[in-house]
Length: 134
Image (cartoon, rainbow, N blue to C red; front, side):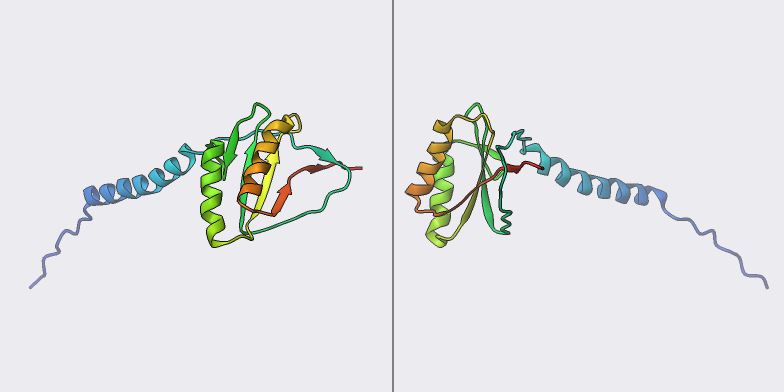
């Protein structure tokens, strides 16, 4: 007596569904993570002598030459920056703030940020610059 062989089939339709869902789960986070970020183009001031400072936990404030402000890479107003820094300083007064500004930025815009740092009693501030290669 011979046994009958069963036809084995792999359900391709369900595999296509799984592949489609995986594709969606991989694409959605990558689209949303870059959606709110803007590229900030700055020509950093050039200096002859600079010290390299690296801090893992720091806050970044970018100032464009037109007077635009960005906090942690997101466009912000001075009031928003003040609010965020004052919330952080309640927990930790030793926050290091990196101030990135264009070399053509008017001092008035930089001074506004300095006033916010002074108001929040933040004393650890680094002005980012580009070292001239000799």
